[in-house]
Length: 108
Image 1 (cartoon, rainbow, N blue to C red):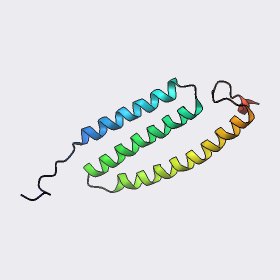
Image 2 (cartoon, helix red, strand yellow):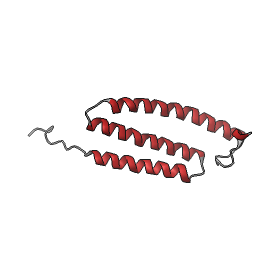
Image 3 (cartoon, one colour):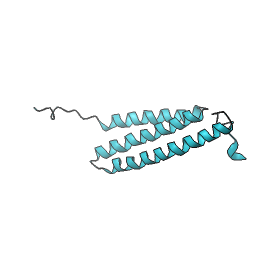
Image 4 (cartoon, one colour):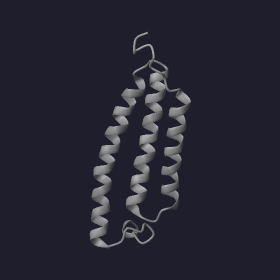
């Protein structure tokens, strides 16, 4: 037996379980936190959970489509991070708080 014969495969369900747990943690952070930065990080965590799911299904189906979608999701996440952090910094400069309930600048 060679070492490549002894490699154990991780079942798809485990990847989906980890992805579901990460998505649930991210959703809990979005729904319960009052800090804009924590909400922002929670959305990023949810995107990473989706990436795990896409790669897991792509690997299980022997397709590169999952990895191709992940490239686009990572690109969108990077753009969102740059624009989102710039908006948060601009809002904090105008009113020094990170509580979304007190940030009513967009309403004016």
